Length: 447
Image 1 (cartoon, one colour):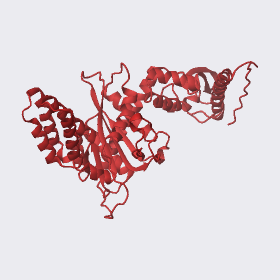
Image 2 (cartoon, rainbow, N blue to C red):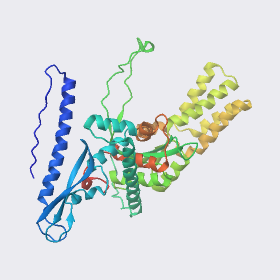
Image 3 (cartoon, rainbow, N blue to C red):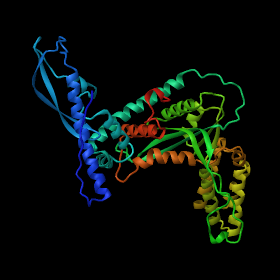
Image 4 (cartoon, rainbow, N blue to C red):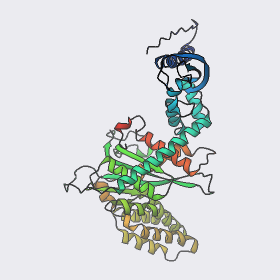
């Protein structure tokens, strides 16, 4: 089929670049609509046979209007109806053309654009942007329905694929020593407002990284402050980029995020002998999933969470003693050094020594810190040694993942979510961040 559509645009000679672009875009949308209608008419002409008897003799008996929403606007398509002169039965050839829509009025291309926009922006903003950028006429409610429907299907597919990978027998490792980086796994949760429970609900996010690249950094500290004037400037700390990584997320039970994290690690590297490092804040559900799916992993408690708990206890003890500024700074330095080097027993002895003679209001934070260190002790070690091995000791990787998967889209003013719809949104956002959206289906990691 060949469709020829002529385009003529009248633009005032005094028009600016913005007016030119707007008028040309509007004319282009009208030309695309005309081309779409002509193409449907040519398709009808190419399918002359009767679907009932196979005869090619027919008679036109009017048209049936069908409204279709496309990426370049909403248009009314006159579908022609014919009566077969041999069997006498009526047919509409365009019905077979529109059969993949299953009675809907939105084309697959616009549905995909609506899903991408709906999981990236609020629905009203998404509808406005689609209309402004491409001329698509689709309401915010239609975007919400399309996004939730596709997201629920995608979330179910992700969970089925993860269960299949976890249920399949694991291959034995090659036994060779790995010189490359270990597999990094970060697990954490993010809270959003809920329509179903007053206290909100937690979305669980995991990021799995098989390769980190060093970012180019300046050789000296380029920032200036009066405190550094006249003194030596130290080089900034090396930063890294997650070169090969996958995000998974769900608002379902914790076992689902554990299975999806295991499947993501298997997708990046199927060799079970590769060392794994799990980084988290020490939540109980994270420990359970780590023991189930990554039992041989090196577990690292986030240093920021640990030091914040201990530091608050030391400051409370300093106020209750009271300690002067020099003694307080010494205690902070001493306990920080002990924890950083993995001397957990010495750090606990120091906290118990500070707890002696404290009033009740100052004693409670110290006791909570002692219980916290005892409870998280299996995930604690020498942070200095981990840093020398190249392991991250902070949860910045997973905190960033929670921010871009959940917070950017779902923690806007006035938003409240149902659990199923929230799971649908994060499933689509994980696909977008994993760059699975634009990958052909046959080339995706998950078939």
